[in-house]
Length: 124
Image (cartoon, rainbow, N blue to C red; front, side, top):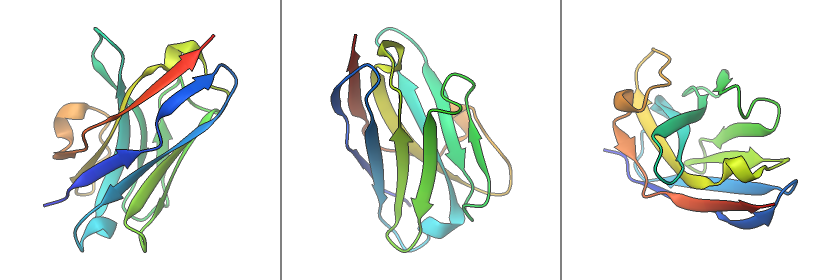
């Protein structure tokens, strides 16, 4: 069982930056692959980024590649999403999620654990 709590969301102007954090409970955090998803109002929940349990591999959606960076600190049971060059279309509720195993998943249905989400609003 993994309990996830996101923080760091807020209101920022276009071109600005935010860093989201996701704190996880449990002693097995380092064995989980961690992802970030986002859901804009009235839209589906979309994949943003994934970092494997070891931290050695990362994956990004095309819409954020080159602007966002996912990282993790297994000693602190925390995963981060550094968001730079933010655009109004990045406005959404951002969720962190976790799953175990060796596969690479970008579909929300494959993630077993979810946080409650944090709102990110980018003004133009």
